[in-house]
Length: 148
Length: 104
Image 1: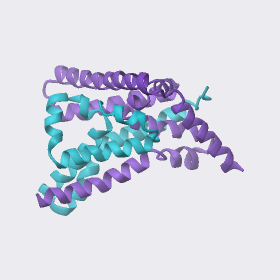
Image 2: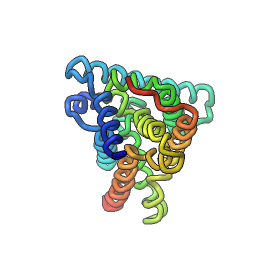
Image 3: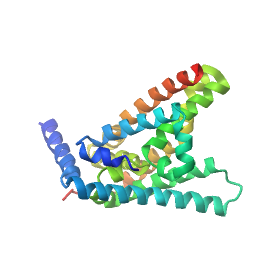
Image 4: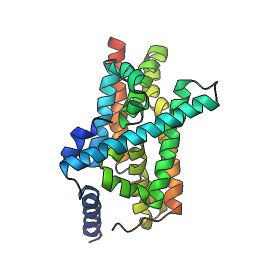
């Protein structure tokens, strides 16, 4: 019974994310929001490199993703990111902020099932496959790198 | 960022979108295209999840070159450890602070 309830909630959640998808306007929305997020990232990176001249581009890049991830978690927390998601679709999912959102969002959703089995266990419901596939792919890449 | 055009028309779940873009990033890095893309577009390609796949692949390949098989196994996650850690920790903190809003 609880499963049914949960499935229903999940389906509602999915449809609430997908509801407004009309092909052309949403393409445009995705384009400019996604672009804006990347622009913000570039801005963070450039200003980091400007204020800390010793910082290399690689380190600044790591900071950049860390900051973007942090901001996105916060926005998910206050509920703003869901609204951005409804508007921009993939424009907010594909950037690293979407990865962060996909961790924070189920974590909040399942908090009511308890800290350990709800929050901590469900945290990776969307990000889990990403990390698993990523690790496997990185090993494949490493092997390919060895061959060539 | 441009790739959303492909994605929005297909009704995939966000996990699948993330995975396919991740694989795209890994593939681009393996074929060496990613570096040129990055020089041209900067954050335009590193901020999307492709950049995550790129660091995974790059970490693994560098690790392979430096420390052999152990380096390869460690490299991918080492390169992305900061991202994952920050994501997990901040998600944990914020989900403790904020409760889920009822959606519409």
